[in-house]
Image (cartoon, rainbow over the protein chains, first blue to last red):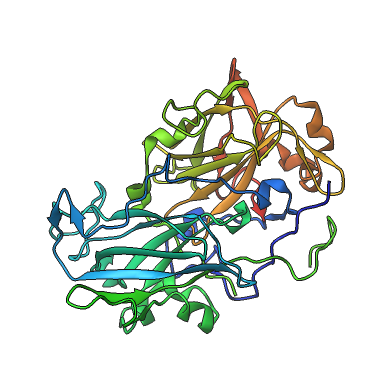
Length: 237
Length: 177
């Protein structure tokens, strides 16, 4: 059996370091020891094939039990590609977020902002053959957190992606353009590379916007692609 | 350039579906799959030894014949509970081909997402006493004195326990994949 093609390693600075003291919670949880670099085997290059048959799609968070959620309705759309530009097709994407007042429908969120009975704040969609996805939601609100004095998270939507190999598995956050909180946010700013940070910010897109209905934002996601030169076990660059 | 990871945060439970921890559930993709039924359980602790009660644990493993491309989907998700515990029900995986005509011992890939983890942690669970552990290529890369952090122990027939320490102490071996 021929060896599977490994995935490329991230360029320096393009991923957030686990040990990031400005994000206080890392200090009790980030490992102290360096991880062992593991050659990619079928375990890392295979991925669960999750089908809407068993994981039903739900692409509209703006309506719950037939009632409209409060807030500004928006559409978020984009493509999921790998670093070689290949579409990540038929792949499950999970999203979740706070409501328009900045509160999660979550038992542990005690922020003094109203819950919306018509907003739960999670969705599940599948990319198409071209890697495209699309969902409808409510623009989430900013909310305070206790990381430091007067700390507020910028407006964001969480995304969880599977890809086609488990080494592509990732959770990220989509931010909104022009948010003044981005410059102050320790989580966003842990990624050193400016271009990598900017890619976490969606762009307003009139093509995604639907007349008389909802503003549209585009958020494209890139998963790891194949390593440029296949290498032998123990020969990681 | 691949998109940067960001933490799952404290509110990831909005995508917690407790049924997913049972990979053999009647309405799931593996209903009726045959093999050796096992339970995988353990506790997650942090750098202070405190229980981690808000983590999302995912597993990914091969089917009983060691295949990833067959019908069986060895994927599960479980939230750690108030005691920091996770628990999965699944089928024991078989040996999986490794690189260069090697054979990997039966193993379960584990991903841990949580507040305070800017990207998820990856580790593996191996089954103590498995003869192939002696020649497993990945275990061979792990210093001998740390291998026990990857080794699940049988605590009752069919139930395997692996406790995970995120930081400090007998810190679990995490993998850069």
